[in-house]
Length: 253
Image (cartoon, rainbow, N blue to C red; front, side):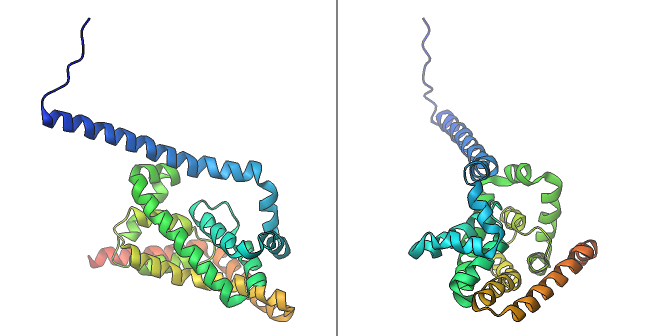
């Protein structure tokens, strides 16, 4: 019976260990991807369907948060993070409830904390998973589109516009940024400034609803609806506007 002899070549043994490590890392990345893409969303949809129904109205979200009493702030921040990383939770409806329960300024603080954590996780998660996994997750063509623009000289202005304009996909941008040439700190600041406008509007509506300021609430909601409708109607023009910045940046290089 033949026995497998161990190589005495240190370099060969090093290469074997390196290959094994790469294989284990690939398996780990695949497992993480499956959990994010299928596992967590499936669990929430199948086992927490009643929880999602709470976020269809301000009162439903408030009732849900009140169940956790002193922990409601941490629960809200956690769901903000989850909404950015996985995009299962309807973030805007949840922000209405936060404005109602916590007030505008505290709600804004908690929302910013959650957004910072969620953006950080998705940015570095993309780096960990690598280009191949992220392209597989979101689609090759879509990721190429965003990465090209995020690698341009006007990338930060483009990021600001993407997060500012309603109706454009936002959370995919943090994953694209993670595998682009963008620096994390600058991306985080730019994306957060862009997020603040929509976030503040949702929280303000919730806070006004809590105080019974229905006229102010109607005005803010009307402005938000008009802006959203304009952005939806003019979506192609707005995308073309973002592309223009990209083309100009390419010409400058």
